[in-house]
Length: 52
Ligand SMILES: [Zn+2]
Image (tube, rainbow, N blue to C red; front, side, top):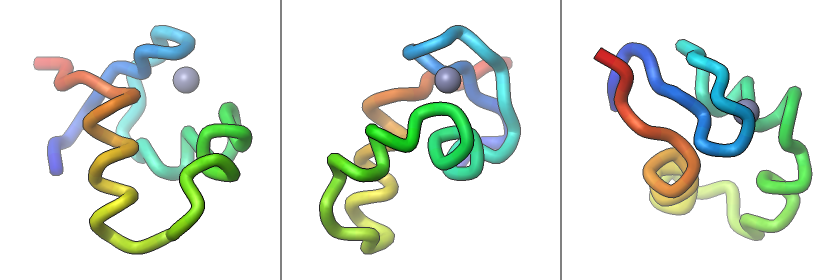
């Protein structure tokens, strides 16, 4: 995983992407079903892009 990432939903640049999803976009987490690491990785790739 990367250090900082930009949220494609709201445009915020965040360091803790899963915390951001939990806090700001709980519906995304709720819709993900499994909380496995693999599905979390997919969520991060889908909703965030690397911010250098
Ligand atoms: Zn966001």
